[in-house]
Amino acid sequence: MTTAVIGAGAAGCVCAYYLLKEGESVTIFDYASPLKTLLPTGGGRCNLAHAEYDFKELTKNYPRGEKFLYSVFSKFSTYDTITLFEELGVKTYVQEDGRIFPESNSSKLVAEAILSKIKNAAFIKEKVSNIISLSNGYKIKTSDAEYFFDNIIIATGGFSKTAQIKGIKNKITEIKPALVGLNSNCKGLSGIVIKDVFSKDCKITDDLLFTHFGIS
Ligand SMILES: Cc1cc2nc3c(=O)[nH]c(=O)nc-3n(C[C@H](O)[C@H](O)[C@H](O)COP(=O)(O)OP(=O)(O)OC[C@H]3O[C@@H](n4cnc5c(N)ncnc54)[C@H](O)[C@@H]3O)c2cc1C
Image 1 (cartoon, rainbow, N blue to C red):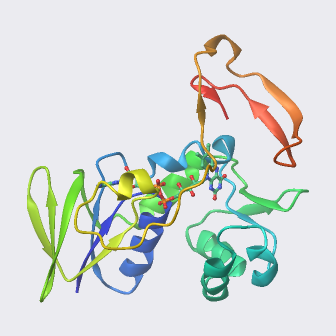
Image 2 (image 1 turned 135 degrees about the vertical axis):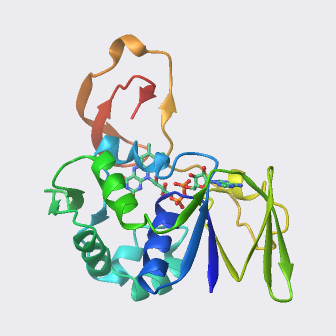
Image 3 (image 1 turned 90 degrees about the horizontal axis):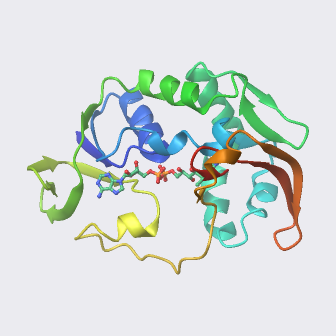
């Protein structure tokens, strides 16, 4: 069976990893470099998971996705996530607050570990614009060409990107503000860290890091 994975973010690349393990033929499409979106995660350290092993408790931390994630985490738990990173050769540690990070504290090295395990997938650096369902599979159109696959997996991240692909009939839920990198031109502050910043509204405490592009 041939499978196209559209989007080479964390979801698409990990999906490709499991498909390759099953002996599938995998082609990944992305107009950007694979795992580019992984690099700024966790302030460059990549927060891999949280040390909550009871999936029912874990879902309580996702106010909008609790129901959906209940079924997801019951099938793929925190244990499975740790096992995955062990298979990838990424050693992990648990921070005092329960967050799990790679021992290297480097999202770049996590990305390299994943990419080294999906070398057998074909990578096409093109933007998918249209998906057409056929009786015997799918036709994918990009700005440059057309391709045919038995199966497709859409892993294009958020609404703004996914909505640009024609032919997707999935229901897209109402969008809400979420985690984003903040761009600013305060380049002179790059490298400064303010420890333990508390947000009264979000009820979170974390470090604030000024980077070359803004605030992380
Ligand atoms: C500042 C910041 C820090 C974060 N830190 C963490 C953290 O520490 N731990 C954590 O778990 N999560 C973190 N996140 C969240 C995490 O980054 C996302 O949940 C994750 O990237 C989602 O992965 P994804 O593969 O679903 O989508 P994305 O990472 O968005 O990947 C989607 C990919 O699809 C490609 N694409 C889109 N449309 C098309 C198209 N038409 N054709 C071809 N390719 C297409 C995009 O170029 C992209 O590469 C953080 C997010 C931000 C913004």
